Amino acid sequence: MSKYDIIVLGSGPGGYVTAIRASQLGFKTAIVEKENLGGVCLNWGCIPTKALLKSAQVFEYLKHAEDYGLSVKEYDKDFGAVVKRSRGVAEGMSKGIQFLMKKNKIDVIEGYGTLKPGKKVDVDGTEYSADHIIVATGARSRELPNLPQDGKKVIGYRQAMTLPEQPKKMIVVGSGAIGIEFAYFYNSMGTEVTVVEYLPNIVPVEDEDVSKQLERSFKKIGIKVMTSAEVTTVDTSGDGVKATVKTAKGEEVLEADIILSAVGIKTNIENIGLEDVGIAVDRDKVLVNDFYQTNVPGYYAIGDITPGQALAHVASAEGILCVEKIAGMHVEPIDYGNIPGCTYASPEIASVGLTEKQAKEKGYDLKIGKFPFSASGKASASGNKDGFVKVIFDAKYGEWLGCHMIGAGVTDMIAEAVLGRKLETTGHEVLKTIHPHPTMSEAVMEAVADAYDEVIHI
Image (cartoon, rainbow, N blue to C red; front, side, top):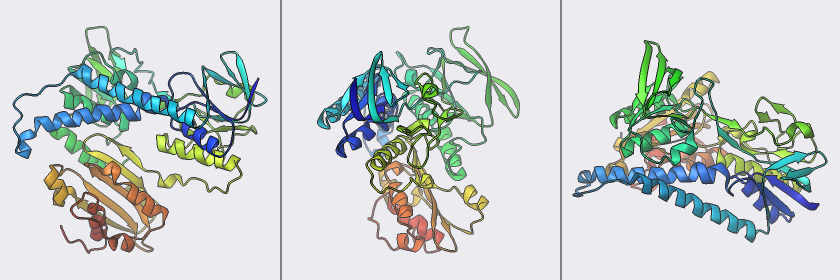
């Protein structure tokens, strides 16, 4: 039986980052993967979807070339080539993870791993043991009872990335990041898209102002948005699919070629031996402490299968903290109130901290500032004037409670707010930090200036 210091089960952005950090700290490390190194995020999520979205963005530029004083006589799309490029990007990144495993002398064990008592992992009949076993098996597309996925007419995100041909009409059920990104991509490619959201606002975890702006932007480009709406039944017997949607006004039947179910995720905790080992679970989450230890010594869990936010960067941070704690380093628990969230459609969305509604519910006296990109020189020059930056401060102490952005490139801007909040920056300190002009990022400074009644450009 092969013996290791640490075995990591799953090689997504939680698992492979954990394994690399463990190796850096001197642990003899192995990683178990049943499919492709990099997990869902790298192969079927974060990375390939961004490749699809980039193709959509370039196609949009071609459509609007005249807006930039350019004349493009002929242009077209090759849907198959767009998909092929996306897959190529994912494959290249997966090979990069293979290189990192070799570089860091991490053993890659291919196969389906199952936890066993006594700090052991069974991989397709072969047992391996370790002093510490870290479970990072991630999640998959969640299925609703009234919306079962057949992989053809009712699909999840995996099929949405590799459809053999572009549908003429698509219904997207759910308006979280996955649903919104695919809605934008397919609309840009020329598919007629309808988004159906059960809650009153699309992107419901975001600040209400952001939700309203995205709905306006989507309607402007021809995406139909239905909120406070529920798909009750689906008929796939014909050539396409018919969805009965219940709204406040009654029932409506939508017809399409395909329905994309984007109603969240389901953790991969079945059939991996949690019960055999006696690891405590609450519904579909593994229970852990601040350092990702389960109730059974020697077994740990990180990423989507634990109660924190199901985001790639969260899983990576959890894994690093977990192994550093194992190594005896002094580590502080993660502040889950300072995790940035991003949606990569056009316009992009990025946020961190409390929404305006949440801050009011907590009883804060607020200073709120907002700067529209329509007043930004850089946004005007680039032709991306939709959106704004909104900042929320505690009026009493100047604490930066939240930051909410919607517009071009904001997913690359949000880190300023995350770092500022981490360092307990006040509004006045942000205001006196000189931002370069012209940039999209100076909208953060301008929004703070608006909160403190010192705004110049609006």
